[in-house]
Image (cartoon, rainbow, N blue to C red; front, side):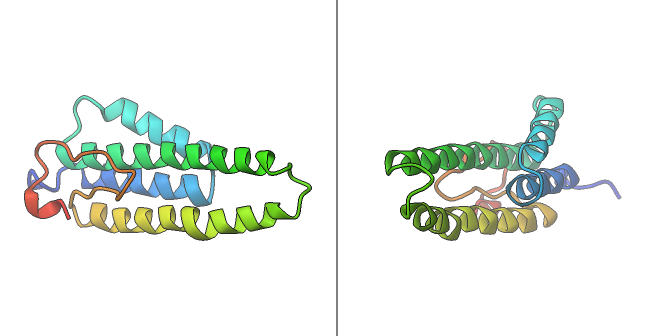
Length: 137
């Protein structure tokens, strides 16, 4: 039986979410490059489910990179990497921001495996046309 229109692209959407998590946890940069390659190859012919997950993971990855640069600039503005404040900033960043991005990525992975569209809170892109309204939660 062929896949339904809603679940077409579920495997690639799952791969996009897995690459997002790998970028955060295992192989930063390398997994992001693979995610960009997946986006580049399927940007024009992707079904709505895949387009939704690719847009979300790329947006969240770019926001994660921007936030990491901002944390580094904050550390430098507070006196550099030899100050006592460094660990406070680093631990606060990883506890609040990084872990939030990982949890959202795990939830997005579950949604992709279920063949459902999902939008990252705060950093997510609007869902493309073709994602059913029931899948927009």
